[in-house]
Amino acid sequence: MIRDLLVKAEKVAAIVGRITAISGAVILMAMMLLTVMDVLLRFLFHRPIMGSLEITQVMMVSISFITMIYSTVQKCHIKVDILTSYIPKPIQQIIDSIFYLICIVFFVIISWKNFGAALHLKKVCQMTDILEIPIYPFYLLISAASTILVLLLVIYLLHIILRTEEK
Image 1: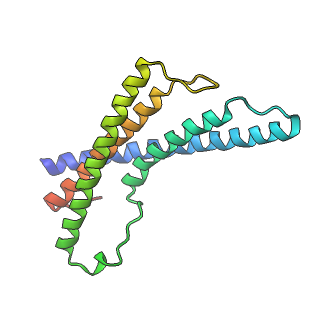
Image 2: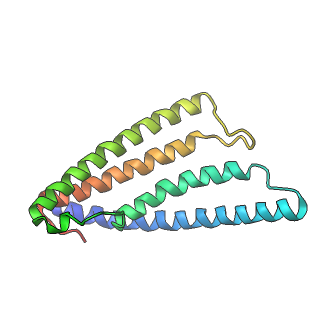
Image 3: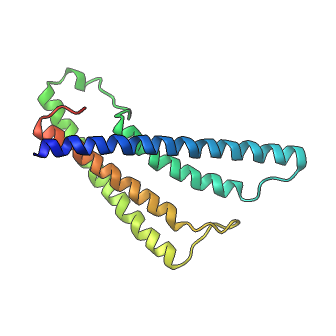
């Protein structure tokens, strides 16, 4: 029963991974277009795009955290396995379990702190300086992305504990 639930959760994770990859690509393209247009307007017409730095900064936050979900689903994070490739599989699984537990704790803290910060920033109406873009939605995005990462890491940890193969 738990194994069936893990299979369903992985299918949902794959869909979420694709959505975040597409979202990240769209945001990255928009950011590149904004930067090119800003440079062209600045040098050709001496009229830069007002607030382009602020827009780029909030786009960077968005790209960083939502594409982290995709790379977790695809398991394409950097992993140095020079030593672990010589360690027996059960020991590797213990090391992976410890790694997943540390990451779960880390991202729970990130999610919790950013959610609290978002509530505070919404209450005090914190905005960017030039364009007055509300900042709290980006803290909520970090919190939501970190929560999704925690769920993914729990799925991967359960695979190790239940000794099932991940797809």
